Length: 293
Length: 265
Image (cartoon, rainbow over all chains, first blue to last red; front, top):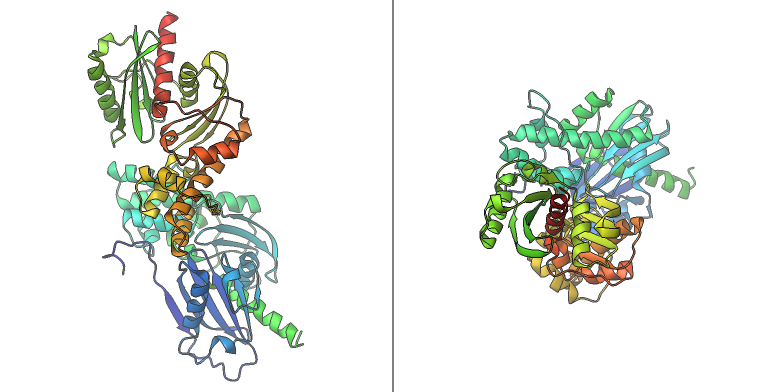
């Protein structure tokens, strides 16, 4: 863990291969590479099923990250990038995936990926990523009907949460859980801007507020901001949350309470939604190309 | 008659002592600590000491700035009245440079534009108070990302003539962008310039919403930053006057207002 280094924002990178699956007899192998502003994700799908994936931090040079994250997803599988029949790039750095056959916006990919993870009943997807927050309305095919996004301001994004985790010196993976240990919810942090909210949090800590209470106040402010966005686009059930922040229980449980709507539980890692959507689009594109569709 | 103006800002407290609404006796400045009213008191008492005066000899005190409430009718400063920054800004600038019709005040956490009317009144104003990207904090945060002192940012920017676009508006995102630019081997000079360009464009677009009428003055702590002035001039397509002590203008305006209040009695 990063506790010694003092880098509390630094979340764990990981990869996984589905042990029960084999790609040797597969008809179509596709890749989805989601280069986000903070995290990059690569998935490999074998005949439309998730086979392998990796999640890592986006580095200074997007091209290098795209190659690294994809190679890591393929590690130990015997597959190489050349074996992927079709690859779609998505996310903030989608134009920087050198081996991608096509790029598709993350809005479309997230809706498509959420449809795969949660099923056809999904109508509202909230994606909270590193540097943006999107509220997407979609149909029973996972097609985007409308969306709203905040990509101008760090308030209500994962990066804002990282900054805060560093400030109160609680690892990013635990900060949500810690925020829920308060016996009573404090008033939310009043500043919108993360820079000002940080200063406000420092003042609260100096006043003697325990860390978990400051964390609760910060999480509540973030939730208020996210609900503003959701309300503008309109929420229809079923409601799901994707992106890295979907793993923060302090955000998810408060969203559920304040919205009065329970989000569906994820059967797969919700951070993969964009990359999964990209790999599924890659499959459809490849089928079209070889005349299967 | 002696009046005082106390400007309790987000990062610094400023005090000005004024004689008969004309002559500045002294100006003092100090950082805002955890206890805002204690910080303000220290700066205020330093001004009294400089001018060799006692609190009883000050006829009237007016306070302004984000933390003005902390000294409002509270001893020892005991400001009788408090006024918003834009009123103090207009008054102070008008006193110094009567031809100014537009004041741009960029402080640590707020950026403001004020249209000055006759006698230094406020005709119109715009404020950015919700976002650090349009305030001095932006430059400070970027200086940290570049690992240079905040006072070196301006001179550094002036060394560059290149235009590097910054995509991020948000301070937090811009920090990541600066790191990416460093990785891409862009020089610190070019990045510093890009930062000042971005901030000038933000302040300009806010002020242009209100409308800009000549003469234009820039005040507040950021007016000390030499790298900020050229891109702001360019964005607004006008000359900009910076008074000699730009960070004291709000406090001076408050002291002027105190003088006018006292005169009406």
